[in-house]
Image (cartoon, rainbow, N blue to C red; front, side, top):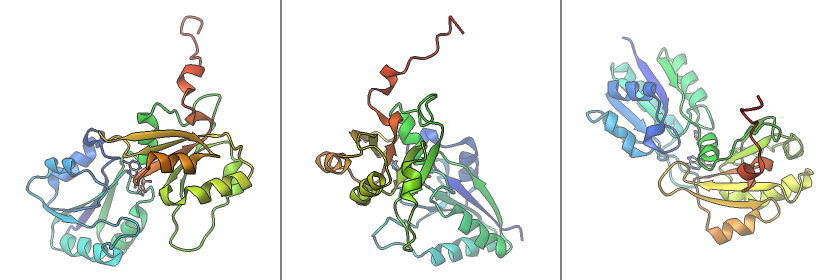
Length: 249
Ligand code: SAH
């Protein structure tokens, strides 16, 4: 029996940001297990598939991970083409790695398909270049949410000189600010908070490290949102940045 599961990234929300490979997997699917941050519009590519919602939003009652594992295994062993559809990229805060390992240990073939992760999409949709030349030499993707009590090395993050893109941070804005300030990041460091990136209801709130919690409150920032922290998040970035002239190049 040639059991196979596709672990597919559906991108940040805009159905046009789906990859061609994701569309191919969806077209072949008999069963689609869908997370709740996935835009259901992408299901137009699998009209005949059985759709099972297995949402896992933070804080809410959610489908236990073990149940999702077993469901994928059962369908795959029945010879079904299974697509596990996740928001963004399956391997960026998406458990893609652990699901792939669990299935492979049980003899199931797994193929991972990239999606555009929300942090990268959100920045680009707001005209923020995360690695703007001369301003940021890198980007660090971080989650503010942990299931254990492990601590991030905030001081290292504050001093890394890279743009920070923080996922699952809406409920932790105060803590993030305190930790980064304590770690030596400048209070006036620009911050962009981007809600529902790439969707028609996308909203962005520009702020800085010292006032981001208050600004987010006034703005009524809600999850899902990403935070972009660093000089590249300045609202006036594109105006300030002189592109090298093509004429003199
Ligand atoms: N695998 C996903 C991330 C899942 S973690 C990815 O690669 O994008 C869930 C977090 O992703 C949310 O709390 C939020 O921080 C972020 N997120 C997902 N979709 C988003 C969107 N459309 N706009 C802003 N943030 C989003």
